[in-house]
Length: 158
Image 1 (tube, rainbow, N blue to C red):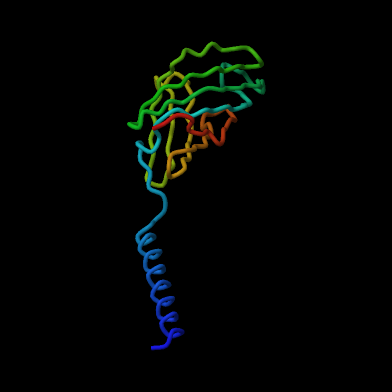
Image 2: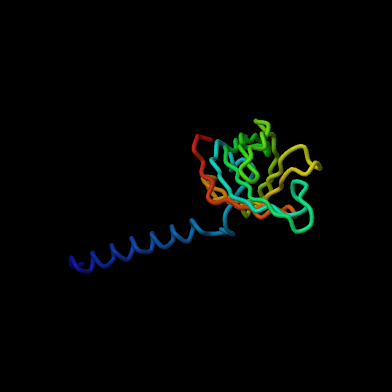
């Protein structure tokens, strides 16, 4: 066989191996694969919020500006702790830290994040997580609270 023919066969073999490898890597891939273990480590967050009734005892059409900043510590098992400063109209609300929370995370990397204890008016969030767990975005799902934050980045190891 001449040299051009060998080159053609060689390139064809490499292209075929590459395509088969790519197809194999994505075979059965239905999207991201997350679990509670995806979130593990320390994540910084900050969020402005607009509060309206019934949040924080506000009445009628009364509104207030809020801000939160802190660190989420996810344990990788559906539990964690928050270290947070929260203000309403510029006044520190002296949130106890650490504040425990629980979270869920589905295979599609969506879930919930809830401060504990449940049932006393503490916030609940819908969360959206990168498949490798390095970032998360959240939006508050409680009546009277318009807040979200994105991205919240992992700043310490898993």
